[in-house]
Image (cartoon, rainbow, N blue to C red; front, side, top):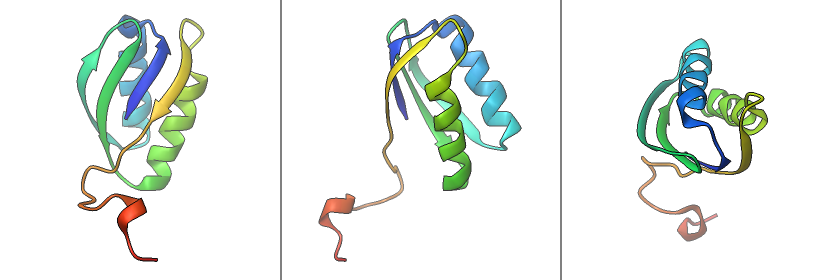
Length: 83
């Protein structure tokens, strides 16, 4: 998951960790700065959706412009799969 926007990483990263833990999701952060946070989240898709929604609304001191998600354990991108 990559979160883009006007981010206060010092407060947003712990906020994400707290909410992911409440949902029972594992997370690992790769990068965080004022405009981008990159993390890996593991758990049921429905709970990851809930975390994404929470992050999009975020705490008062951040402004999330976009959240990009990519399935890491999927060997083939969805546009290449047979329907």
